[in-house]
Image 1 (spheres, rainbow, N blue to C red):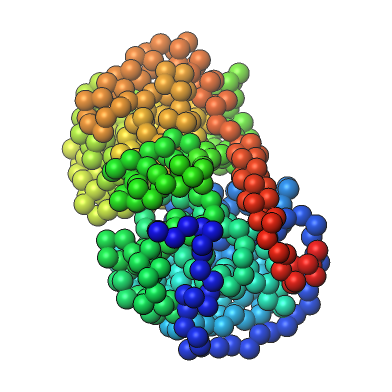
Image 2 (image 1 turned 120 degrees about the vertical axis):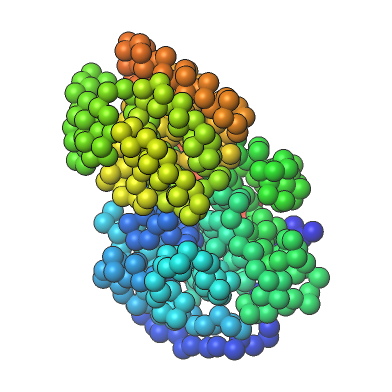
Length: 516
């Protein structure tokens, strides 16, 4: 098994000649920054293109880190991104390799000053559907090329092309779409890979490496295979210098069978080496019930009238009863999220006078079963297939309890959003849910992924609801519980410092010396 220290150079991995080439376009250099330079590589970002929690983190974490580092984001320019990111200034071009086409690189600046580099490659990214799936919900058949292009670009930008005028000191990769980048590096650079969800690994036919220009005959290529498939995520785990997960508990869980998704052995090695760290996510400060303009009424622990207005709005909007506690599900409708467990306890909630609103989309079978629940209990259960962030905020504010019976949960953000809006989460004791919910104080936890323990936790919630003083006390504690990204970014800063320090013994590349 290869170690990060033995990460092969580009010449060892790739063919001697690329099948595509493109001239480089020269533009004026950007002003050099004395701060450490970090290229944050992601497949999505909130505000431009988001499908899940990674998008939220990719928007908030670089912004928080920018207080101490020169952080710039790299991502594909999907059609949705180009509709939202204006203006985009074209900086230059990157050559292709094997079946990976060349692409241009553009730059846009978000409203808070965060700079985003966009890969302009219409044949790969200008499509309907979302970042990963077509309009029918199926994986794009060339996803290995689409995200191989992202990985190759990250490595190419690390070499500091002269038209960029900026060379990163560190690569921060996120999940499988960017995890193959270390295999393309031609120049030493420290690499951090953050695992947001180990269940998504980027698996492709074993021969796909040929399309990417990797030398599949090299013995080291076997280190990239998992279940006889090329695995982007395993490549990152093997060759990144450090790994992080999005909560402390998840880092401990993924070295065990089951949650480790078949990669637990190599992850256990990384943990033993001190190369695996858990850092719990934060949430943006704009999740504030006292100031959020989207809410029907603002509120704080000294004045709950806005909470009551939000509850009334929810009952009218979703046509459920105005009396009794309101439970909500705001989630992907997937087996991982325990939606089938909520289906099993829904009748119990209704029988005890509760109401349930479900917002989300995902697996078609689960969508259908949720809609059937509504048909059985139309006065107390409402289902909205889809997602609307404004309505989600209003549901958090209007609800009494959030249901999160996840089978595993790397971190989870919904429980922190709910707490900030005085909705108490009822969640399984796993991953980041353990790290962000105090049982009996800021929410309710249960152990097994089974209806029995889940229902018992719901009964505890009903008991608290019937005691207004205790309910208000837990709401106050919950609203104070979530930590902001300002605090969550500090461990990343320390990790960056350690990574850069470890590389201090290496010769400084001439190009980087010229920029210093």
